[in-house]
Length: 624
Image 1 (tube, rainbow, N blue to C red):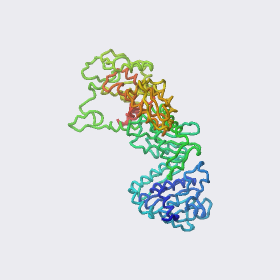
Image 2: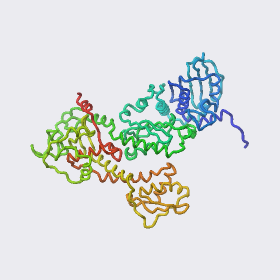
Image 3: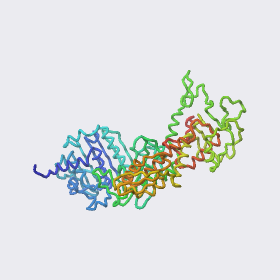
Image 4: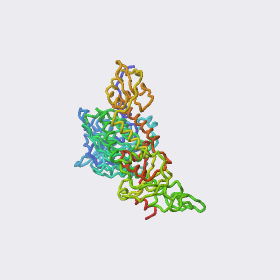
């Protein structure tokens, strides 16, 4: 069979298969062109999920008739010259319009600012017509009809109109987050209108438009620089999470990307703070020299490659963890909303005796022995206590000093007294001024109810103390070398020479974590000590896993994560158990420790440790 050159139309259709995978791909390319043209208003209209119609209208710089003729030809662009290391625009290959025009009915109408009239050019299934005068406002209108009519086989692989319409919506949202100063409007016969007004430099306002108003009160600002890479944006508190990764957004020099390195680093930063199967919320912008990142990796331009991926990953993990430590020790505001819904006031139907707030009190009150009331705040006493009998809480209510909190927490496993003389509270105003307030009651021997100056706080005592113990153990990983156990006979692990080369630079760090190894010939590692904390270890499997991770991330977080996971398990089993009756000073000591401990807003499994109700929220319950 002889070799022959493919026609220009077939070449464009092959290219279209790489660049235009679905209607959302076409929408992305067209919106990018509008943004590169300096548009401040972009309107997108669709029909049939973008398959029947996709129209993008902008108020950008527009094109002359000569530019129109070149714009629909392959590899014609105004955005780059010959230097692919200095790409400062979203588009740069010059493939979008000719690729779309080879598989659809494409019409482009444009007018430059100051020009007397505009022009339109059409490209149907690869057939190009000459530009013709057309009435059009300054800017450009690109209309795509009957996408993939020239390659009907591609239509069979598209999803439903609803799914394709949703994919276009996601594209527009990502672009809107990347460019908050631009107004976006998405409408059509297959959807409800989405209008996103420009917010200028207020990125958080644009994020609230896209991710919902709940994001703003639960957001933590990120602003960090490492060497030549800048990172800014907002992340959610750990307890403000979602069931999928669709709320993780990253932008590199303004370009929306879905890079595995970036997404993995964001999740790693939330390790041990977000429950398994849940995902944090984050919107992050990266700024760096274009020469330090390669955006010419994939036709869709969704992936990037960094010259120093370890630097970028370390910046993400470090910046997010630092911000969470400083500002993340608070419960999600949505917890209070959910609580208010659960406390919906009402009257129990006649004949029923429902307890609790959900269906009214009925004939049951809330005075059983599983509720410990602080006597100076409540006239009720647990059943079985005569008037004047000693309350469950004994001893002074005065908050423990921080240095005493550790001793009190260490003694939580001791039986707590139930009948000591009660002393009036001292320094109550000072106690109430603390963020988590002063303990007032213990419900069901598991939940601490505290009063603060601004409202009410309910604490899960087991989850809270579990976090305190875990953080203490985690701190030991940083402050000192972890104990190791020597092997009677060193474990020899045979590996490819390149894996050994990747692992050896981390030998010193591994030694601090209790794992001691050395080179044993060109293709083997000798393991001499393993972390005592891990007990019996499968050394070969651990070494090979670390070698794989070192090759992928160029970091050595695998062993530390494993140790932290063990620390979390030990903390869970060594913490205050549910059902433990606590004295009031013990509860206050726990509250003070929570205020001083990073990450105390959620337990090791990512669940919230407390819920806060503002006084205004409580007043809403009673319609005040």
